[in-house]
Length: 431
Ligand code: SPV
Ligand code: MG
Image (cartoon, rainbow, N blue to C red; front, side, top):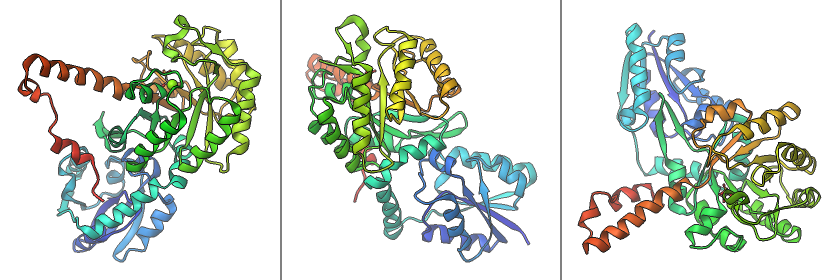
């Protein structure tokens, strides 16, 4: 009997999948690959059920003869092992980022004379409803909140991008690219104090209050499912911080990062050019401890951000504080620097990792922008935050457009640089 192989990267089965199985049955015995958790994430399909549950779900489909794990998004390994006569897939992968996977399958089938079968992609209201329900589950506070912990466990590095609105949230949520022969996407979103303030035309000095910050978070949450890390500035007074922890945890934020500064906070990228005061280790530890004491779930994370390198107090001071903050209950350490090279960040991380292999490390490589994610991983860093790039990329374009209209007294001269609204709204979901 001939062998037909297909791979499912889903945690719900709908009539589209059943159609693939029914078509496959006509050609031989059907083997289904279940994509592993890590690859589901890279594919922008964060699993809502465990790998074992996905295997059981697929084993129960009538007509499936065997289930195997597929560990890679590309088919080299699995096809080499199984050598099926056919691979079957919906024809929706002929365009878009998934086309690289299709090419990879064709390349591997050719090696031994296998054949690709493509069935017309099934899409209707009932399938949309099933897919929407799965997505809505991901957006629920209890699910979204715990997702950051899972990502830290499953990913080499959690890629986090700054968002400040529903639209930028949708960009973080939906952008998937083919890169170096693989698919990639962002794992989490950063609500930056700098960008949230700047978008409101205000300075980054804790002037935009928590109610307003929460409104930004809600806007983003309304249209996305990915976990949110909030830039919580200094965390404010301990007496206020504890209330904010409760609110943020309840609405589904995964983590707040608070920095060890007091007084009128200024943005760290100004470094010692402006007056900035570091908090005492004792007071900051009390703040962390107070926050940890009031949270209700195991999911919510309070990450301590150390400003010693920004304020030129040295690595010893940063390490001493890191130890104390972890002791006080911090779920992670963010180490910040405004140097153009990552050397001091790497030295800190290497030394921290010698004494602590577990506590997640977070970095914001705004100034050391030539550093690759692979280098961060080598130094034990778990979360990378691209903290302001969407705001910085939008600004020059908007300013240029404004100037062009003023200069030309009409818009024709910039039209070819403007995205048609029809394209922008493809990001927006219809409920
Ligand atoms: C922010 O994005 O607001 C930050 C990171 O706090 S930084 O601007 O680099 O200080
Ligand atoms: Mg900030």
